[in-house]
Length: 184
Image (cartoon, rainbow, N blue to C red; front, side, top):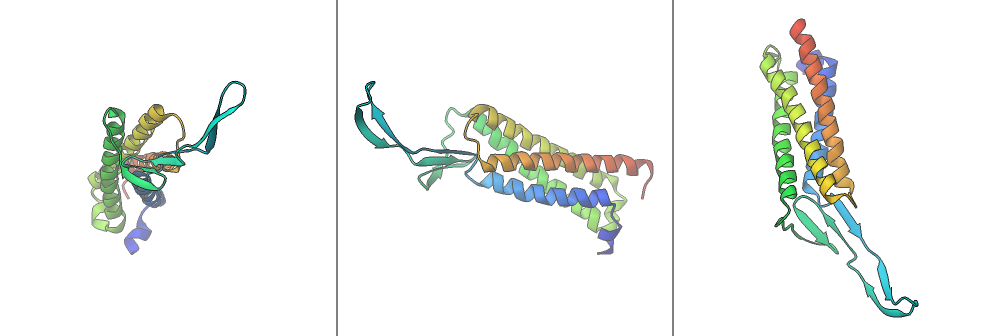
């Protein structure tokens, strides 16, 4: 583990941010809580206030990128006519793939001294982090614009993950520029 101790501090910070962002993004990607709408009992009445009937609406539904749960019964989401959801899924899937590339290359750079002399590995990690953050933030932006209301905690986790990846990518890019001028 002496290779880890020799790695620059900003790279270690970026690695920690990426691990946190990865876990947060996997949770956001896989949970059906991007949107949560919950209702209570409502009563129908005429203009004079006379009760016509009483009904209980659906207790609520939770929706993610892949599933919708109504009253705790979940099913796959129908995406017919929801092209924007296909775009969100695509950007989130690309982000998941590029995050794996970013983490693998960064961890190789940190834990293997042989990789430290290969700036291409470091550059791939930095660019992958930035692309990951951009894809996540695009998916959050598209989803937020199309849904607008009742956004829930998985949506917030995805946004936080995108920001963490962006910060990590910026740290890596800054470190790469600094080390390109004066190698370790």
